[in-house]
Length: 274
Image (cartoon, rainbow, N blue to C red; front, top):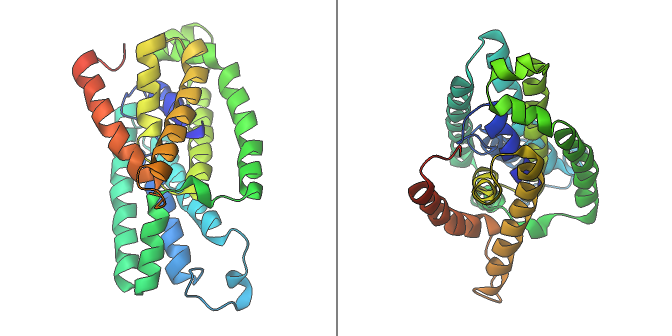
């Protein structure tokens, strides 16, 4: 739900059909934060149970969230100080993704075998790793975020027609863009910090829904959230049953399911904005 909602918001406010939590570097920032916590801070399975950091609750998830938040803050900083265009913001996200990925690889190079395995397993993404307390935390954050986007769904319709049109209709474009980007990135960061890196959903779920309902955000936003949840639920069911009793990481399945479908939509539909 959160990844799909973030994808809808980012694609609208940045006027770019390729915008998503994954392409803006949020997921890669979370992966770097998790790798830093596992190896540098010693929160991995090979660490001794001593000291404050070793007993830190949700340690890896918390640093993954901080890594994702850092990526979001850097994008906002660049966009505000340099007045970057929406296209340049997406390119900044791609650059930050490469930087975070390089940092994660460097940490892996100096890590032990057990720590490398922990990092790789974390980046796979798995919905079964979350506890009830983490799910409750995400639910408490997701509800007000969903309400915010639903309240502004008509403003998103105006923003989709262009900044000038939105301003003529009384929309505070800069404030809406900044607030929406922060909230979309943070809910995606919380999802990645809780479950690991799960690609494709935030990018493709809005496009799949747009083909069925059109671009009206009154329908696109809630139905994209349901579509994202349905895709993840289907992928998790496949991951648990296709090679039972072996359970595959759901992030692998979403990529296998999503990439061909997204390519089909590109060939079939042509313009992703329609």
